[in-house]
Length: 516
Image (cartoon, one colour):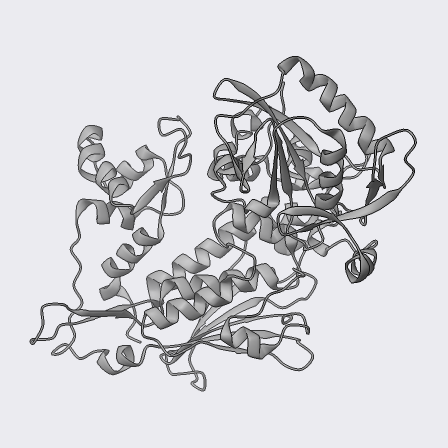
């Protein structure tokens, strides 16, 4: 069986979810050049997670040229054996990428997945000629592979034996603690070509392909990132891996509050918390002005900013600290608190202006999976997006805070001033929503649901009527999306809400939310 990698090949070739600097395209097999790139990706100088080398595809200005040139299928086995030898003899410490072959437009290509190594820094032979003896450390600079020199070399050497927490083996757990169901669901959701084979593979085989299992064959262990995403109760291994959402109806100084705690696999936990906040605490106000036709619309807290703030906390918190991510909501603001704060090299002044760029990510593997789930873009884009979304909504600017020792990080989203003033004034404020069939479908969609489950949730019996009146319009209007977009008719197909769908649902539920 030809192994598959946990990546959507179409996304990889068209650079939809993988940044160009994380992919290198090679028209043909050049062992020396590929070796240097493997070394650079394995060193993972910027903690970006797994990177890819696509052999058999030309590039032009950093983008792949399709149809691919392809490789001779009869040479693939020899290339893979050569890679094995190079990984043992030409890189120190030994390193082996994961490989898989694919057929693209009638051509065979070879894809190498090169996760950040656990025993970095790595160095490799500068030349593969028999007379050459020089070795060097290689890193990535933007989209190029270069030798590490000067301060970069010193910084790379400083990474020795510094394996990030989320990439470490967890010897208190076993492979039985990884859920095959959760792994398979993840692969389906991200559109991985490994998904159809997942049910036939062992947990160890799946785990090694996803790089969530490590150790020798006789003693494999799950990695912390695997337990965080693919165990039903990761808080058993990492106490207070949870999101606490707290509503203060009388304000932060009041005597009453309502609390809801979310636990479970990181991706699911984050989405459930966001959906709960959206349903109960995000409200759109529509003000109609008699002097003009257009109504004024704004949200008390724009959903995009809330999502980015919460995902940022899940991404960057420490899972070694026994402190939950906390969301505190009042009529005046929504505050997201996480522990610890950003690296001390990042200035709060730069955060407040959206100019802060981190070269070190606390949880590179957590970020890798959150990006695959479309929960974050990574690469320091979260704070600028919060600033932009708040401004577009007409809200006051967000506030970012930490202490001198960076023991915490707080993001405060002030409520829209007009939302506070207009709340409850039925004379000047009118909230209306047209509940069309496609909006009803979006409102009934919870998480990921199959076509049959959606139809039953709406209480409909006629499948053709459901398809024409509800499903197709919801897809055409972008309220929902396929979980396996490249195979619309797959028997495993399910549907999920889009950002546009979430906004429509928020309007539908506006009358059922507490007044803020």
